[in-house]
Image 1 (tube, rainbow, N blue to C red):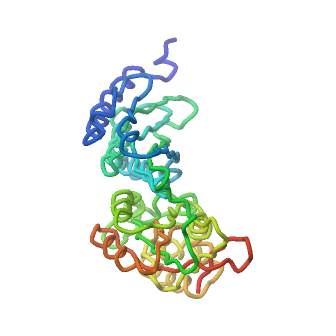
Image 2: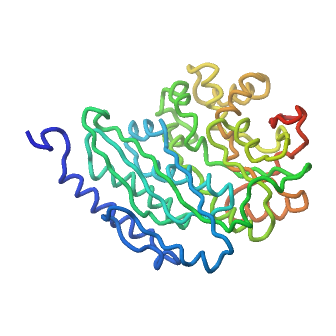
Image 3: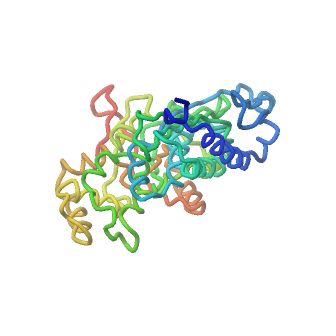
Length: 364
């Protein structure tokens, strides 16, 4: 018995690597052209930091890692693989952005039971697209073929991002003051969170959803907030930032606070997108569908306090990223973000914590 008979196709791996190499090369541009010291195929990727030791007083590397989770199951069922790679990049770069860091490079890890080079390349195509959009270099990665461990036709993907920020410009919430405004930036849907629940309460991915299938609506990739937020940071001082991922509003917004503040969210300050009212209806009764489900979901968010808290504790509910800024800067920030194609609203404020040292979130 040889390796191929054991389930590992080395030649298919070579074919996949050739496809990755071309995709990765397209992410090297601008300042990164001279910083990247080698290409895909080496044992490790190398990125020179020389530029930052001359342009920053004290460059600090910032890193985050994440995956796409069970959203991948939707991609496999619909045989659409080119968006989940964007999700993987977004979940990492949006996290390091919370501290004011600019992404430098990204590495991915792709695991499967039986490698299909074309399918794997479609996933990495999304990774490369996310890297290009955020100025990151796809510096390397790993593809693991593990027969008998993963089901044939199923893949898992994870990755990590490394960025840089000058220490004096780190955003860590220490500048947040009572009365600071919370500005919410629109999400593109559930992003990559809550899909273990979504898959249970929305069983029919072929259901019509405004002219597309519900499944395709759920595959909308995570917004990449890097460019609009970093360009805004050049115009105003941002005191704190939160990426609304797993745990929704209740877990993520208070994470930006160092001092004991409460996040006070104003009901009705933005319109919850239909995808979330549809999920709400499914949580209440998976048998609902279509326009009826949208109507019932919207009503439930108004009348069922327990279900509303569950939704805001699981999903981003239409707000994927939150900024804490001085009230005087709100109008300028919202105008900047709107022009950049990222709708934004003033959704609340920071108040002294009602529970002493405990940092909480409440709606008013």
